[in-house]
Image 1 (cartoon, rainbow, N blue to C red):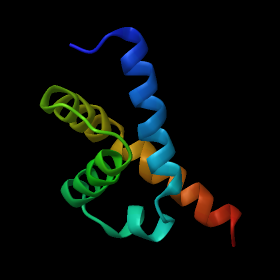
Image 2: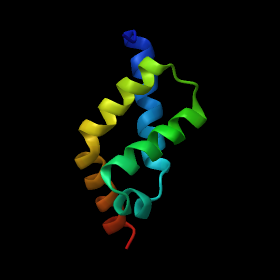
Image 3: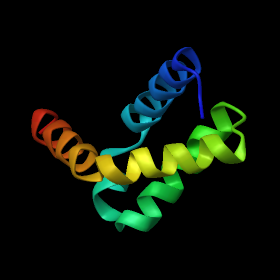
Image 4: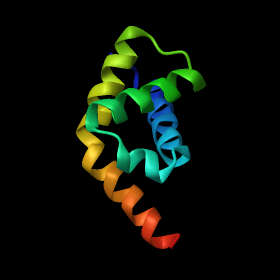
Length: 79
């Protein structure tokens, strides 16, 4: 299991990757592909252990509705 500090740093990376991902990409991919895309981008920014990948996959999976809501809000604000 990740330590508290390591988890906090990784969560910041996750949300940074989400913010950097194009809105249309977030809204157009199905859940599985979106999770895979975000994990791939996250791995490109930071080396992750197998445990971290599994943990981040579960975390992102549980936040997909929120991620899509935020992307939808960005789309509306940028219109």
